Length: 461
Image (cartoon, rainbow, N blue to C red; front, top):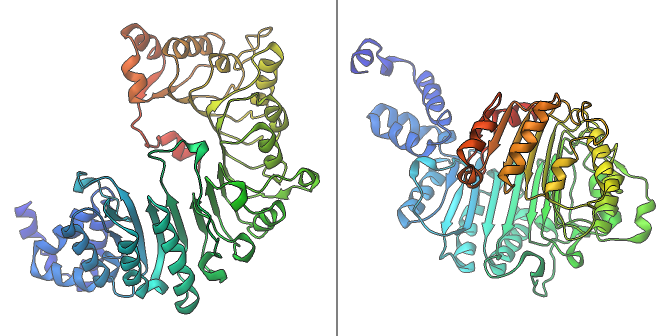
């Protein structure tokens, strides 16, 4: 390395070329951008001068943990000057023990002792550059901090403007001592999103456990709309929800996890809103009746990635009958905690639902009844495979013996799996003979929590 640096005199290159090289060094180190930026400024005086003059090297910021890290983040905030800012504030950080090398370059994180007053103080300083913020992701633990965020956005947004804001997420935790289905909301007055002003560049909106005044908020031209854990009393009515969808003709991802329009009996007769560009759909934590109502509100025949989660505690077979034929282009299917009628009629109906998605290639599965695996076989015609293009499976919280038998039968009846991903927990429960069977003519890999497989990435393109 020393010899090559002597041969190639990099510091004799023009400043603009060195600047481009340093950008590649920093932003190609996605898992270590913090250390990459630090090392660039430590190497030599010339590199430090160039790096400090380049505002785009410092515009992705992470406030978190110790006071030293927070001070460093504020230093980067100043170095970024008027560059577009990508910021995430996480007020729900349990500690400061994570490895520097694992830091995400787009996160602003704060320690667990952050109070609503601390949040207000931080936002008042951050919002001096509100017009330059391009991405703002905020995670809080308590109600007061969440309301401070909405209040200050409503105050400063209309006055200073948010012309650059493309992505906004606000997540409220508060699940430590409460069951998900029994959360009690305080009596709060919902405020319009960013004071009811139009946000011209906004494409990505996620609201998790926080309310807005839907009737006075301008929501349009979104490509991602993600709402979670919002009770009916704080949800939009069906007409307003449909209006939001109509105003987002380029919508590509729609996620509704325990949040959606208020249930209305007469709304089921409305003509579904057409969402031709929707590729990813997530529906979770609803009753059978509400789920059927929800799916009646829109039509998305081009969905490629479908997720159904926490549809349990009742018989959801009527929902799957309704969905049969609705999503013919699905290639990735996620079924977590899904329940249906365990009868010959129920199994046959679920098989028809799978048949209506002939392109299914990747299955993510967790916490489902043993009988769900039976829906991939026809009792009277075992040689005609269900989901013949299914090659990849990602599993967690399933019975190892059932998984082994299912894999073996898929191979026996002409629809072998190519690769099986398992969670760390499932891998620990597999016996040596089960591992041997799963690795026969198939690849078995452990998948870390939250990781994405190459096949998933390829299929979502």
